[in-house]
Amino acid sequence: MQHRRIVSIGLVCLGLGFGLGAATAQAQAPAAAAAPKFGVLSFLGESINIIGSRPSTGSRLSKNDQMSVDIPDAGFDASALSATQATLKRLAPQNEAMLFNVKAPKWIANPNELFTDGKLQVSAKLLESLRASGATHLVVLTRHRAEALVQFHDWGYNMGGTAEGLGYIISRMERVIDKTTGNTQDGFIAPFVFVRLSLVNLSDASVIKQRTITVAQPLTMKISSASTDPWDSLPAAEKIDKLNQMIERELDNALPKLVEGLI
Image (cartoon, rainbow, N blue to C red; front, side, top):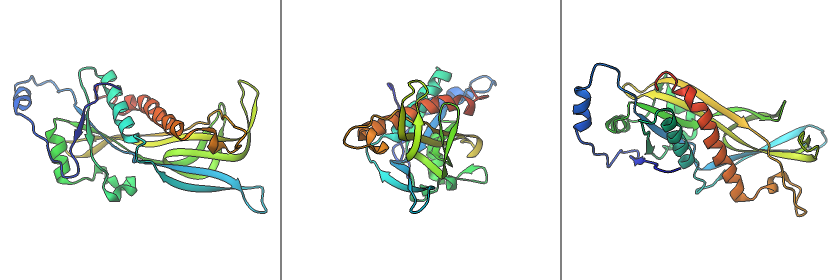
């Protein structure tokens, strides 16, 4: 996406310098409510979670394996920031959202700890710098944990357990029929995007509204003669591309409801 504006403020919020012109103009503005100015933070991280089923010994039931894989150059946060900015621009063309490049603190391993008692829990210095940018509201994107449910055309398949953030759900046992072609395949691979969107009022760090994205959709597999494992049906780069595409699409779907009433 073009015309992306990313403000790098870091945890110590260095390098922000702004003139007084905007403040002076605002003081002279009419009493009508000013249009909100959005900033965006993304803490989706640079790892994916892989949830896969395998047969349990001596049983027809499945057992799920879970693992986390770090992918430093995946660009998930960059995709999320760009998509959020583009959607907000579409909803309010006069308002270009500011993208803040902030490294997640170590304790963000549990995204729920970022919000306590209905407020965004970050340092006072970070809040001060966010406000100094001119933003009035903040859209914060964090990983969300939900039931590992894969949506097919007209039914859902529950893998059991939960999934969080970004990744892939894999079944190596279920026989799946493609209703459009009639073809069958053993197993499936489904990218998932489980994200929480939080709208924060920067004047007091209070959470105005939250929405969640919980989408897991199976892909048509391209099985090669070398391997029949669903995980091998997509090249590594394509796995990352699929997730980034889902991030962009699902944020575009979810953001209008998040900011409804403000723009």
